[in-house]
Image: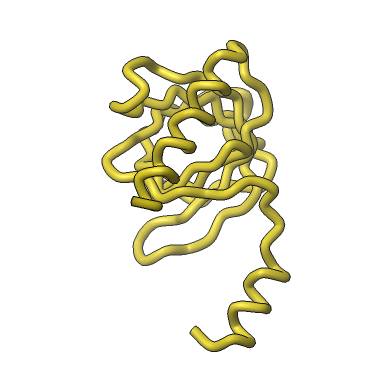
Length: 129
């Protein structure tokens, strides 16, 4: 990557928290979108990367910005299901699927937020080895 591209990428970056790539983790989601007429749709998304403020997932369908998703994350290293209410921040076509960026909007259990933070910290520590 050229120096100009790196500088441009840093200027375009709006995330507050670092994102870390995740392997073999999924999130079960109940999606409530404007086009769903108040009905939730259940779907399973592979997690691409995760940060303290949100994550990127792969979806079979395009989602509109501000769509709400009630997430249950199953991450082996955490040993329990993590629940969070999230909101779609962006959606982009990626091969035959869509990459969807979601922000964590509300943690029903604050200890889940702490668990995600510890999980991310451990992933970063492994990368530095």
